Image 1 (cartoon, one colour):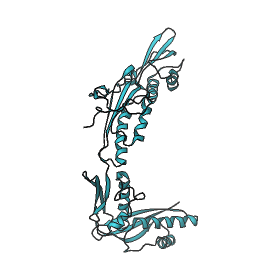
Image 2 (image 1 turned 180 degrees about the vertical axis):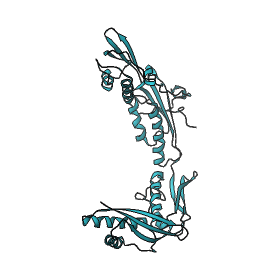
Image 3 (image 1 turned 30 degrees about the vertical axis):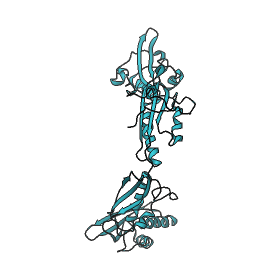
Image 4 (image 1 turned 60 degrees about the horizontal axis):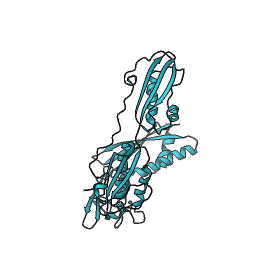
Length: 372
């Protein structure tokens, strides 16, 4: 089990040298921590249930609760001005602007009548800053990744970002071949109102691929399908390379397109199924394919086209009844027609409408012409 206990590195306070052999009891993130939650905003009732404020011009605007955030930053964000009226719309807009600063955990607007006019106070509570940052576990793997966390010290603590960082680390490990990496990220109240962070990493074994296997394909060979997988000079998604999930998913879309260009419009390329051999540190990927039937082109008709143009368009299309339907060939043909019409200064737009006969395995094509 991965935890922020045991041998750990020292807090990141400038010197990156690890302190080994430290007792688990001395590590602040050793015990189970309560999450440091962002307080729920408490706002003036006018925001939740609009009401009429005292009909007085604003005589004084105060900013209360700031510690490290400059008051001028808040003043620049709000729209309320001396001499203006305070309305529910102004309060909503100002609170939204304060939240967009992303440095406060609470914001309220208080209004108090006075003989001189309305006293308006924007009461805010700052988010805590990050105090000490502790690393535990096998952080020597991908050290460049962990060095970035030195920059967290002194930054504004954002719980949502903190959890995103953990997911980012897991994704980076997977990208480097550590498919079973586990990362624990915890936060606890620290000294001086700050928040201490602890990251514990266990990358596990590094996996390499044995290759990609296609199952169910008959019309298109394995060799032809594998040519569509980009291996980045033999480093990814190939035997001996690393498994790249997102890039393989993109390549499988190209496999799907290849089937469309061979008339198999109902072909289904399944998701990659990863088979892990933990003992050998190998992964293989299996992709199931249902090719379906081959469809051919049926009739080709033009709608709303002048007779002379229809004959010219048909010749430029270069497709004929009985051909294996190809989406790429059709797109190229439509581009030729559009370019020819543009060159003759008679631009047109062609909208293809298909009618599929699943019994005869035929696709009838109607091209609706719009003269521009």
